[in-house]
Length: 87
Image 1 (cartoon, rainbow, N blue to C red):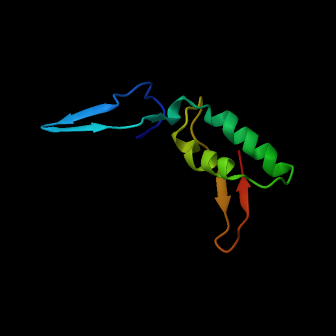
Image 2: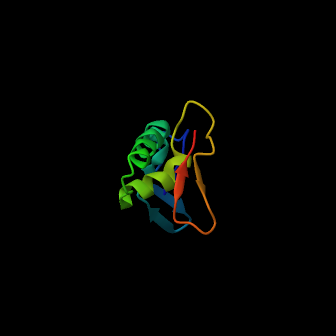
């Protein structure tokens, strides 16, 4: 289960009648979204390619905690493979 900002803990066992579900919780909301976007913006500015981990961080960044509202952090041209980081 993926949990966003504001969720600090969650049960990993869910009971539904005679069924018991065991889940692995991923508390994405504990990660600092602003630090992740800053790191990725700096990497993009240097012209470094994003790794698979970087792309995962970018995709999950809206679920991460932040002090200010989520900006339009990423824009992409419809016919381009270029991703532009904005503030």
